Length: 179
Image 1 (cartoon, helix red, strand yellow):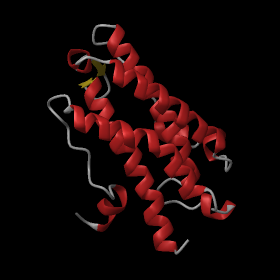
Image 2 (cartoon, helix red, strand yellow):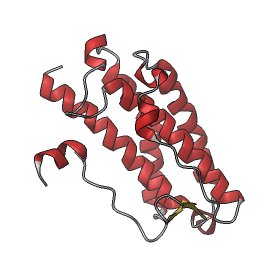
Image 3 (cartoon, rainbow, N blue to C red):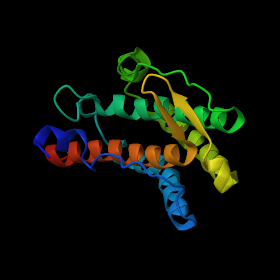
Image 4 (tube, one colour):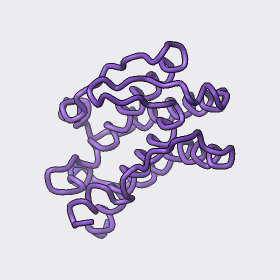
C-alpha cells in the first residue's frame, strides 16, 4: 500500500462479509458502535480552532468535517437499514457526501451537535440491530448508483469499520502533529 493509500485507509479497506456475523462478533461490533461517540469526543475535546480546521491529509477533510460527516453518513445508513427491514429491497437515495462536507454546518467548529447525533443514532441503531433475527439481518437495500445490494449485517459491519476508519484519521493526524 502506497503512502496516499495508507493516509486514505489507515486501518485498511472494508472487507465485505458473505454471512451475518456470529453472536460474539455482533456483540463486539455493537460495543464498538456504542463507544465511538465517546472516543471521538475524547480525541477532539482539547483541539483548538486551527487544529479542528486541519485536514487529515492533503486534499482531505478537516477534523471538524470528518466528525460532521460521520453524523450525516450514519444517520443516512441507520434510516436505510429501517427501509431495508420494512420494504422489499428498496432503492435508497444517495447523497453527495463531498458536497455535504462543504456546507456551512459541516464546516462548523463546534462538534457537540454532531457528537450528540452520533450518540443518539448509534444508541438507536444498536437497539435496532439487537432486535433482528438472523434472517432479518439478511434483508437488504439497493444502492442504485453503485448497482449493489447491501444486507443489513454488512451495513452494521461497514459502519463500524467506517467509525474506526475516521477515528484513525484523527489519531494519525494528531500523532503526526504531536498534539
